[in-house]
Image (cartoon, rainbow, N blue to C red; front, side, top):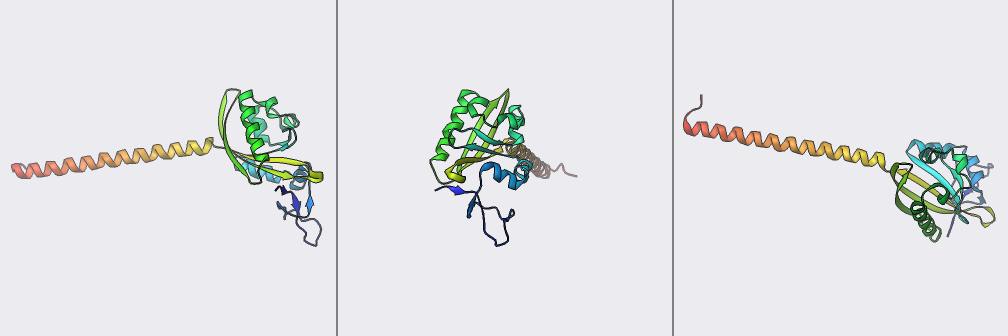
Length: 193
C-alpha cells in the first residue's frame, strides 16, 4: 500500500495547511513542493534534517535539499536528475540503493542508518524512507535525513560531564573517609586539640 500525497476536501477549495498523506487529489513531487513553497524543506533543515525525493523508477533525484547540496559540495539543482552512483562512491551508492529498494518493497516507513564519507568528511545519518504515489501511478521515494553528528557530540559531552561528576564524587568520598579516619586516629592517640 502506498501513501498518496493529497489534499483533504474542505468544501472551501484547496487547503494548503491541511496537506495530508491521504486524500482525494494526488500531486506530483514538483507540485507538492510548489504547494509547500519551500516551507517543509526549510523547517526540516532548521531541525538538522534534509528532504530528498527520488523517482521510484530509476532512483533519480527530483528534489534535493540545500543541506545535502552543501554536504556533497554541489548546488541542489545540479543534483536533480542524478542518482546516488553519480554523487557518491560505489560502496555508498550501493548501500543507499539497497535501502531504497527495501523501502520500495514495503508499505511502512523504512528507518535506516548510514555512515557516509564524501570528500574527506564522514557523517552518520538516520534516514526515514517512504514510497509515495503521484499522479498516473508515478511513485516517488521520499526520504528525510537526520545528521546524527550533533546528537552524538552532545551525548559524548554529556557522558564526559557525567564521568567528571562521578570522579569528583568518588574523590570527595575518599577525602571524607580520610578525614574521618584521621579524626578517629587522633582521638584514639589522644593527639586531638
